[in-house]
Image (cartoon, rainbow, N blue to C red; front, side, top):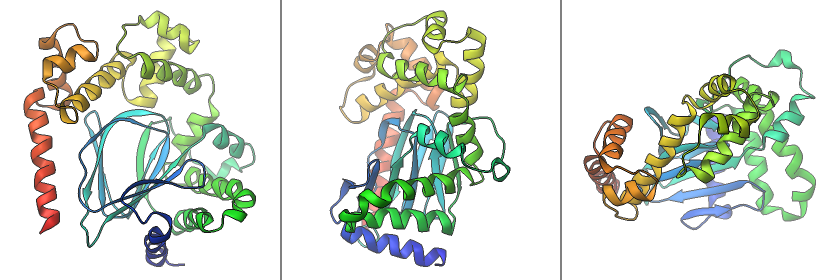
Length: 305
């Protein structure tokens, strides 16, 4: 099938798989559908290791100073859990946003790599997030995986081989080498993932670099090298990003003021929080939050015209 025809088939499938707005879980493990009729408020939190595909509409994902705007021509591959801000930018009642999210199991990637001719794969340092152009083969595999929601009796037979096919299309894509490097190197990125898991649960607590290296079961300098290659940040910067993202969520979604949000996420000084927030996001907390709300309101008004 041609790529436009595949995209249309996926869009039509949403009427059966996810007729309601918001997020809809699939019968397929790790797969979910997302439908919105207007731009969404920013989601501030952790983006799991996943494939994010836009079928119709547009989406923006922000990781620190890196911005990824993508629509139906590209997909976003996140190979490790990362603190991001994400929201739907293009959606109307007549032309809703339609998106598919498929969580990625690195153990399944590792098992697949043991059977694949590595001559088909590129080489790259593991990087936590990247975007690439959608291919017909990837869309076709995803479409057949999604269709199992209409055929529950066949899911037990075909979920695993279809998930493996999707993973194969990802690892042989232009950015797949990054996912391969992450999955195949247990001592480097595997140790970083242990540190990431700890930081996600305990970002409000201070932890020495030596202690974090112990959690990762590697030396301090090795931890720093692999951590930065994977997340583009040092462990200290990653923890601060978790704190700042959670504080931004508390201000945008829960309406907390900057000082209250700062104390909630573990800062002892609101002034230090404001300085670090400004460095990370280019604006002081109040201006940043007002800008998000204004941008969302403008996008919503434009979508309703």
